[in-house]
Length: 118
Ligand code: HEC
Image (cartoon, rainbow, N blue to C red; front, side, top):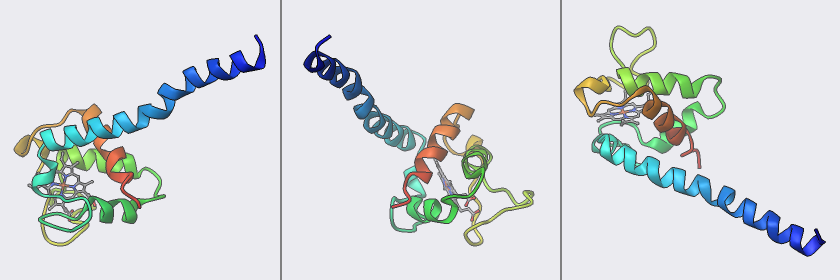
């Protein structure tokens, strides 16, 4: 292939890859809406729960933050947890008492919450 053709070929391959994260973020926002996350959380201001930005800033760079948050997105922050109530005196109820999330959704939402570190 000539260099020009190679460049065009590469661009065709890379464009969808460049766009994919943007679509993934959009669909996670839709998921968060569907699972009622925004009834207690806002993006940048604290409401009933901490803002997604506060959460991302606190746990940014912490090992296993995504696993810990995915667990809590599923089971809530119950009083019986060894580490609980990270933000004050209010629990996040378990997902069965909110809009239930699957394990996969909890992981996806945890990664998305952590991406608010801006
Ligand atoms: C009924 C209200 C409510 C709903 C609905 C809710 N949360 Fe929460 N969330 C809270 C409260 C309150 C806290 C603070 C709990 C604490 O201090 O431990 C919290 C904390 C969190 C945390 C931080 C946990 C930590 O260890 O610091 C994450 C992440 C989170 N919520 C994500 C979500 C996501 C994603 C959804 C949607 C699936 C959701 N929340 C739905 C009330 C809610």
